Image (cartoon, rainbow, N blue to C red):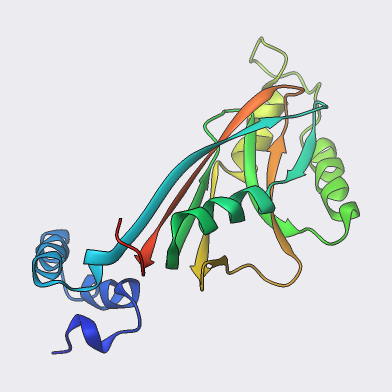
Length: 182
């Protein structure tokens, strides 16, 4: 079969390896590659926490530049960037960042679909925020290519606040092949 050097990146190789068998096989391959000086000897990684301060109860904040800064800092040439929101009344999504009306439309539509006062059982008064956060989701994964987020031309990464204003955190993890040693 092919060896790791026949693939463009360690992720492409592990995609191939994953198709061949179990996690034990994959981790065995990873150990073999590290020991043999394969692509995993130059793996880059970075985990950072972004501090977000929101100004209203519901809003979408474009955090693309902060996430790109983490990717640039990581040294990862090719890989994946995970953006995670560790809150139950906030979320993260990828959508159009060129026209600010899109973010407003998302907020307005969610407010119509999930109104603030709808007879919820949750007693804290923020049940709608929990539902909205569940609909959008706590994480996004964006490919990294040539040290850049591989977003579409009009795409951006948005922090979604549904129970503000608050101080929030966003966890960013970048992992992939690097030309630098970790």
